[in-house]
Length: 88
Image (cartoon, rainbow, N blue to C red; front, side, top):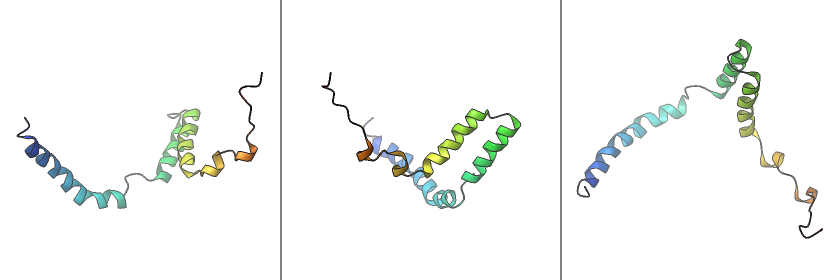
């Protein structure tokens, strides 16, 4: 089993290298579906009733989350209220 490991690894890596070499640039340059198209599909699904309104909102929030900055989410340290755990 250990004798064949280098050969198996080599034959397993060859297709991966070929795929990366020839398809990587195509996939990066031409995404199958853009973010805008996905948003339109979600809206269309809501209009047709195939996507529930709450599901549509959740999916839309996925896109909004990626657009947020950390400063929009976090509470600044001076605004945090502290409570000592030893206070009775």
